[in-house]
View 1: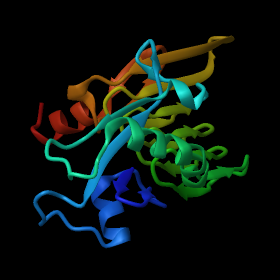
View 2: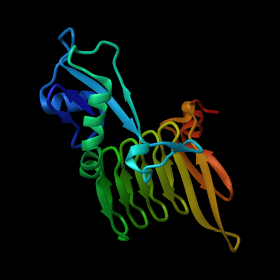
View 3: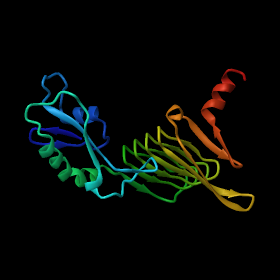
Length: 207
């Protein structure tokens, strides 16, 4: 979000401050600045953001060093908290279907669901759920859940989940993406996690 002297602005397609600036005609060429970049994020549990937590438990922080003279931390934080519910719900994109072969793309905080062979792409903090042989791609702090033969790509701290039957047993496999794995493509076969990005790179090198 971005705070000005008389407004609290949020993006319609992304939480990125630069995108919010573009959408509302803000520039960074003034000193002191005429706006304040802020973030308000949910608490975490086990490293996973809890988006269903009450809004008064979300953490507010300022994302810049130089502040305008009019900015008063306590007062302007309350301004942001008042518009948070509206901004949050307006920003979430909900696309849900059990149909196979669908292709959905959403921004940050998207919730996308498809059937088998779906291609779902979301931004940061997205929740993507596909069926067998789906391709799911999310930004940081996303939760991606696929079934047999699915390829999952998440940003740092994303949770990748595969659910499928193996030798008559229903198994659930979970992998949390480390910083150096962000953007890597993973699949899960016969109980083994496979980093497709590394295997493809090795193939190119002839290894």
